[in-house]
Image (cartoon, rainbow, N blue to C red; front, side, top):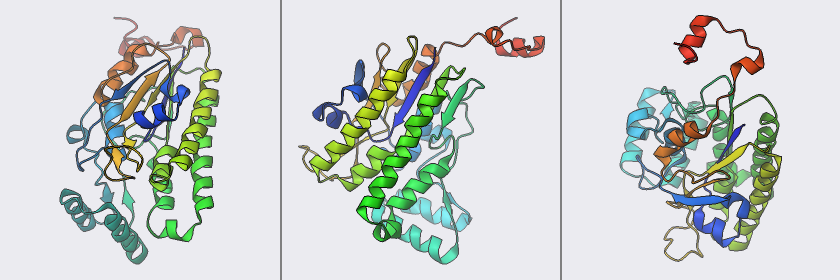
Length: 300
């Protein structure tokens, strides 16, 4: 049995229901309670490491503040977050610093254990945990000067092709001898910011992603399970009560083909561990020494 964990960034419960995305909503779904720390709303760089570790950002230490090569710039960046400087202004200042100084901003990674750890657990990108450079690439395309230089068609193409590669990776990874596979997909977030005032265009994005999730579900084996998670949703112009189209909403999703999904972001790690069936190492023909078997808990 393999548990497939799809980290579907910005999948919004209200949008998924409104757009009738049955695959994203799964067999059982809840509006999962999420969290914030540096900002007044959930932030990608903070929530995903919290989901993986089961720890609050104040404990695992990875926040949206990140770090620059230069410690002085890092300190100034943290001040900007504390005073809630407008995000577009921060992006503009960050781009200017990169262009003029060559400095780079980096999202840090956790030192704490996560449910992604283990020889028979495969992960392809997870913000704050593994391969942040992919997230940096997407953020770079859709922020600041780069967005102005590229046409909308190119932006959309890059978002879709990057997402498609993750779904393809998941479908291949789950055919191997693994107990868990996980990947982070950022397409609903980046195109949500782009189409937050265009309902029909955003519906098209959801329908396309829902189709990919449907293909992933079809690829599941008879004993495999799928867990779909988001870190936040996306406020939109056509949603009553949404004040700032394009701002992250609190309407995160947890859905699954298994039983009841986790109800809080900090409960996901425990849920995953409870649902992963540890594969029998002996079935692999592994010749593990007694000391290693003892460390794994198979013998006392």
